Length: 246
Image 1: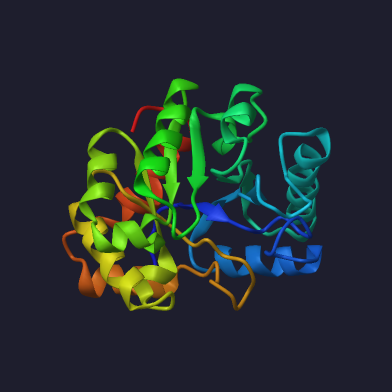
Image 2: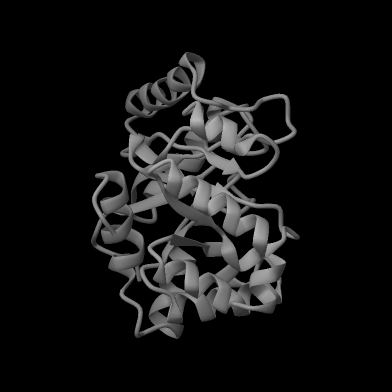
């Protein structure tokens, strides 16, 4: 059952030809139309940032122009999606130096930074980087914690992060079981136990981690009746977009 509220997709690789997500503008528009058909009104465009790819996607005039160009194309096609800025920032290498230089695009210019790690990263390094984000007066939004091996072994690490005010962003695909059994089980546990989790598509293509939210809404209705979909897909992401305290 589709929601009657505006869904905000906090994590989506919809900007064309900037990472391993959409490769063309037509593909971006197709992704947006598919998302809109399932109740999504706002998409945070979050290209991979600070990776080994030559396209680092740090804050820059060309990157800002890419958000604006996509929004104009959506408006021209009358696709009812609003693009919000952001990036999925990999914590590696000179992460702290880039933090200090304010090179990273936060979510809609807010205090919230979508932060990811290598799947096999050590918990001590994760904690070090999360503290660095907080020292920069930002709030970590931790991308897909259920996919990190240390969290799959010890989900309490992530629930502790949430209790300390860090936001857990769970992937739709993990809950749906398309990203492996360990991610599925861990995502379900975090959704039930963590403080203020949010769910996002982490969509890369029309058929790769699709931006369509229909299957997720049906799953929440069927298997997670104790979870209010409005909270995890609208209320909490909207607070992040507005730079309000979660």
